[in-house]
Image 1 (cartoon, rainbow, N blue to C red):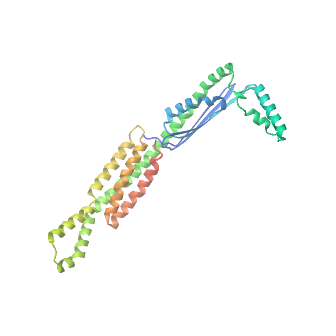
Image 2: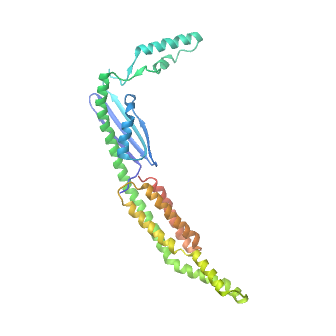
Image 3: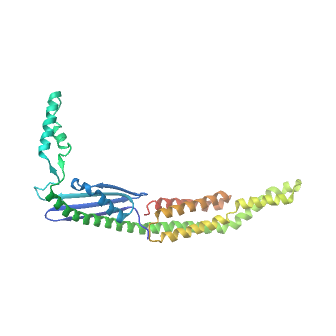
Length: 294
């Protein structure tokens, strides 16, 4: 069964020390396009999170936001080098005095200076690793819920695509039903238009018949009808396969479109064009939907 690339998942946990929340939103994309929002103390875990996402969601535009809130009043997620902060602040203050500049932003500037906010101490880092294990479980749960959402959306998408294909198949049968009448109308029109001219002019009968055969071959849509039906059947077959099929379904849609367009250009018949337009309309819906298939 196919999966949609639209999904949503949320998970969390809470104990006496911390609250953890993870939220995942996904949309369609040709590749894995990951946007992460991680707490500063876990920013170096970006590669691990990417691997988790790729292992479960595979591809798509993914937005993952993680919130980590410690409950201990004396627990902060970073270590501040206070001596270095003081040195920066005094240096910036002296520079400001020398040029008579405003000092309102010196605190912020000193705090954001290099190495003022540093990694945790070893004991804090050890605690952070334990917390990271909990965070991983929450992220995985959110990703799994998003994946299940995609599966549920995929079932709905499957039904819509199958209905679209069935509409095209029904229109194709209508085209086949009127194909014989179309040929007869073309023959009668040619015979009517040229009968008087044939009687009044001397010409090579064999050459004229050859030209008519060439003309009918240019209008013949037998091969296109066969190929279109083959593509429709293949689309349904791929739709029922388990693996990622979004790109393949897109390629098959292109082939379906080529055959429908060729039938339309060769038809030269108002009754047949009505069904061709219907098929084109359904195909546009298919193309739009397959963009969202994983």
